[in-house]
Length: 281
Image 1 (cartoon, rainbow, N blue to C red):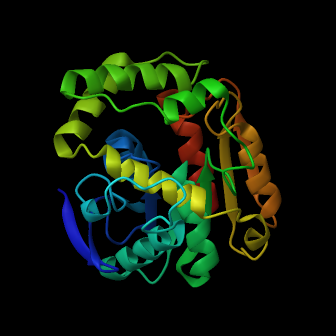
Image 2 (cartoon, rainbow, N blue to C red; image 1 turned 45 degrees about the horizontal axis):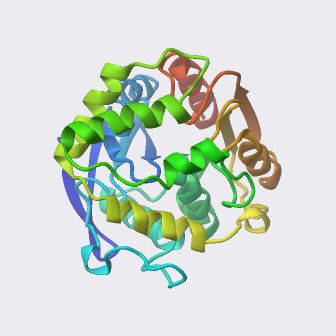
């Protein structure tokens, strides 16, 4: 069941899995992605390991508040918000959940938000897991082909959006694992029906680009940290994961051959095992 919580002056939509008495674990999704990109099966695997899992829509995504009044960000203009604000949203959601602190897992832009949360609100983060992410956009720039996907013109109409999703994940997904086109179409269709807002994605991207490099600030992070990254990621190359792990004292880096910029089902057991090892007392 999706619930909306007032947080940091906006509403944030979230869903939970597992017992409320479990270890609190917050999942933060990436650019333009909705909470459903954290597959229910993956969330349930984490819940089975004793976590109380919450997945949510960032601002300008899904059923959370969209800042429509800001329109498309203008080239060279200051964006309406930064990753700092997205991290503050996350801390405010934790307040609404009654969580003084949580284990925090972020993927792609979600990893950037998770890193920023650990920097800005260190007492709120019990452990940090950064997946297929980077300390800054210039640290591990995308390949030319992946950049073209990222900056491409959004499709118009439901069927065109579904076809574009298949092309996108064919380009940036994991070459070492079979692409589940029907699953991609189904998830893209559900996302389209929940909310379709390309301008919101553009505002999130503007926030990433304007937020700079966190490398020096990550040296302050003192919580146990795990970095997971695909060795075949064309959108955020593995150098981004290596740089994140190098920046955080004591961070553990795990890389996966054949993994691109997605979360292959075949690797879920490994992801869950690594995260559980980190969060277990």
